Length: 194
Image 1: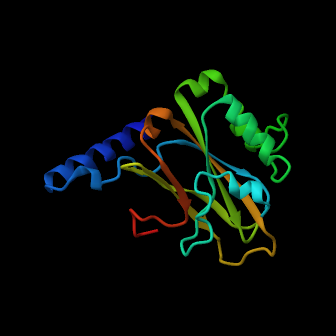
Image 2 (image 1 turned 120 degrees about the vertical axis):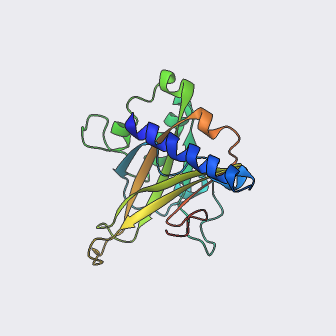
């Protein structure tokens, strides 16, 4: 609860300061930091087409800006379709396991959950199994949403294996109204400090 209040206060302050500067407030992000419940789950590594082609930002991965696939799940049918599509290629975990995995993170995502909420799922392809990831910030500006990902490589020495992670954000649907462009990466066009 304190986290949500803090994020709301920061967002309000940004909007007020934008108005005081005389600028159009649409130039300022509406949401920053990460106000959402987030899960980081092991997914394994795979370069097969279904993992990439079904993403909201498909077609942008091989540009000069590195992006990760991002998916939006808005119903139990969407969730079942995502599981069916990804399960042959990535590790979703067993529904019986209690360790954090895709099934564990989405276990409460039923019709009641999806009435007012959605899931955003980012697949982070990692060049080493020793790299860890988390969400640096979520920005919504005009019709674009960006999830900025932090990569922590520890001491900089990685293992010699490929890996992958699901970053799952539980987002109120009202926050996504009007959003038509979704992106995720280890950079931020709104915050040059990443």
